[in-house]
Image (cartoon, rainbow, N blue to C red; front, side):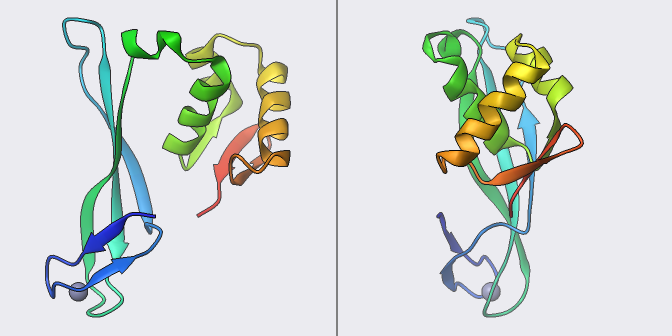
Length: 124
Ligand SMILES: [Zn+2]
C-alpha cells in the first residue's frame, strides 16, 4: 500500500483510496501511452480528502513484451469497474476466454474483486 502524507495536517498514513480514476495521455512518438491512476484518500487525522497519483504505467509499444495475462491484470487493477466487452476490445480476446482467465486469477488470489453480469468489479 502506498504511504500518503496529508497535505493539510502532514499526517502520514497508509490506506486504500476511497476513489480511483484513470487519466490517459496521448501517445508519444513511440506509440506509448502513459496511464495515470489518480486517487482520493481520506486523512484519518483531519478527515480531509487528499488527491494524488496512485500508480502510473506505460502501455503501447512497451507492453508488447508482456503476456496477455499480465496485461489483463493491469487492466483489471486500473479499473474499479469494466465490462468484459471493453476488456475484450483492449486485449483482442474473446469474452468467454477473458471470463475464464479472470476466474483463474481470482482463484490464485492475484486479483481482488468479482464478476457480476459480465462486468469486473474491483474490491475496494
Ligand atoms: Zn490530515
